[in-house]
Image (cartoon, rainbow, N blue to C red; front, top):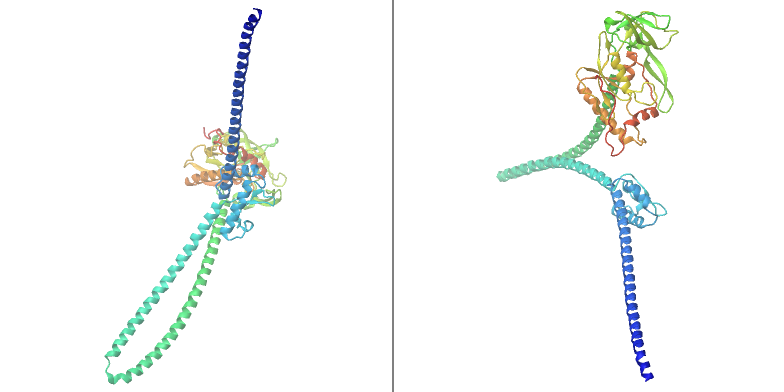
Length: 526
């Protein structure tokens, strides 16, 4: 009875054990399948990453290859050449492609190899380590354009030669036609003659043949002389064209010289003195015979010239000065030199004012004395001329543009400034009117091939040239500031080194993509 109980007790244990084993197997299978799925997903992610990396690499290679082709063709965009040279490595795919392209181009042009390509096609080259380096600045498109122009010129010359040939051929055909007509008439006449005149006719024929032979000989000689004459005419025509070109060049130089002489002509040669010096005071000031009746105001300036200047003329005041050029070397320059310049500091009466000396050229041998004449290029008793200003005006030579201060000073003197060229906006501040008498031209920006701002300065100079042309259309007289300010007694730096001029120009240069700067000086006359 006891054994039976024991058997019944082990059955649930066996069932539980079997259940535990089956459950363990099921969970193991499930964990294995989940782990396998994770591994599979990880492999897929890695594969996609590899594809993306390969695609990015191919895209970058394609972009570099596109830059290479754009630079070679001369249609590069932005900094294509700079980025190409920076990202390229010696012996890479770009170097291989460039070697292939240059080699094929050399074959097409019959140059043998890439090293013998014409200069116009050596846009990019390879050094001895297969590193791409800059060649010539132009591209293949520029070379093709140049070749097209040469071809068109050759076609034009060929057309001209063909025209001459056609004209000569027409003359020859006409001459042959006349000869055929004469031969036909002669043959007809021979057939109509009686037989008894045959002997006589044969004699005449012989004579005709002789004359014909002589004519042929003469014609050959004439043809030879004509050919020689045509050759001489061709040589003469070429010489004529050469002489015409030389004459044109001389005429151009002459026109330039005439223009320069016209510009150098003294614009103020017919100025009249506005007053004179009454006396020189103990405190160093001078008294002049202009006052409140003449609408003189403090700040007005004058140039002083000797009492006999109207008789002796401008040449009597020309002095030779030593001034530095752009490289710091000194050169001789002939300039008009007044005795002195003065500025009104006090109006003392209806016909008198007190002035301070602002400069005196030679106080020992040529000092200011009573009777010296007062000149001002734009001021007249009770009135003043209207002017316009363009360029850089550096009053003290410190490398900064003082045009706004110059406008204020002139207005304070009573000189009306109708307009000035605002180099920030590249426009006239106000319209130039028919009352504007003088266009005063200051320093223009200095430009050279090696200047890093060459292109921007070229654009600025073009805008200034257009502004000058607009003033010329109003028949405004142009005058250089070196002639204008000294003749009115106003102090202004006459010579400015290139570095100072570049410093004064710098604030007006725009960077790539930058809008025109705003602001500027006051509107003259307001």
